[in-house]
Image (tube, rainbow, N blue to C red; front, side, top):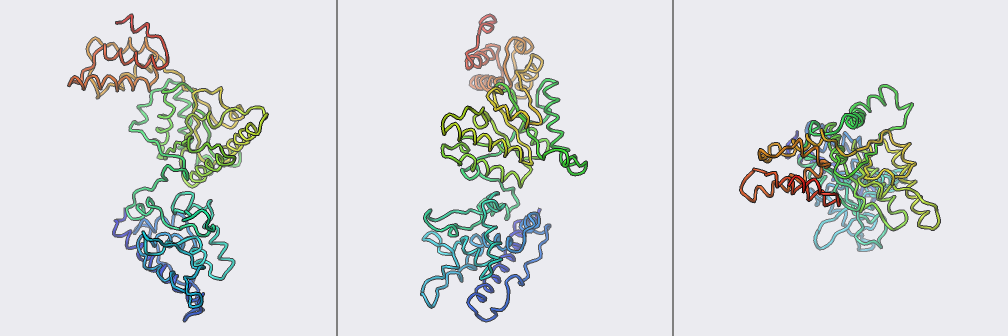
Length: 455
């Protein structure tokens, strides 16, 4: 991994190239000395992916010259703001700064922050063809915005589109300096966040049939690319893989999704439905589109928890709201079907899901309540290396008598650990365990008769 010093050195070389480009573009535009030159003829620094994270990223993205210039321009305010000062020059005719140069400054930052207009000016000058290149870079669908490489905001919503600021995001600046992986941040512009787990694949406790179905998903994540491109399966089937996990809460749906990602080297992003769903027509689709656009550039697993809230059954179109909801569901169906990556939807109630989804899933996996053998293993795994159990605690009987999911068992562990630590001990009594179970059963208004019989 290149050192921060190497990364900064490579960035400084890129800034020197940007400085030369800026001077040439201004000379050409204002017909100064050397105006007959072209900025495209100025040699950009040679990139070596082993020498800097910046070089590696530019090469991996396969950026063309104008995209590389756009990235350098976004980076300039962070490391060489003085190279942009020339863009604040005043016109002798108007005695004002050149509006065609773009840029923005305020009291908090004395230098110039580039805008979309700045990028258009540097890339195109007076050349309409290159102006279209610049506008494509400024598109919301370009990876610079989809992956939150740049922050694109208007200082004022009433200002023109090209007045949007063009500056490298903090997380990407940190990545280019240190090599620490940049991740999109949860926000209205990217309504999803990564989910991880400290557990490993052997810690996943499922019955044989359930584990077989989950292993099928894992096999696709491991070998799907080979099957599609080398075996020619892409000629026969649509790209991507779609799975539905359904079953009661706490049965391992989210954990399984996290472990599928961890065991196959993929990030898993849980979509935040509270940020996705909007009462305004078109906004829900727009918010969801941002997530799919970002995932299209990554090998992520997209995980929709409580998916029936977003992908519920369509109803008879009696009102305009019904029609809007049905159109929204139809859009979501199509977007999932067209996505080339892996999508996992999870719901507690399969019956709430729109029937049209069933034919779009490669697999539908029922995470039912664990049987006694799985419950025993869950109890053993939970308390191992955490707490010691009194001799009269019979986990076999506990597992047999009380139907609890893995999530509920972990809640009992937490309760028992708190009771023990308050006593200054790691020892858990039978009474602690039964009281913890009783608390979990009460959450679902389930009977506690068995508890009373044992106590």
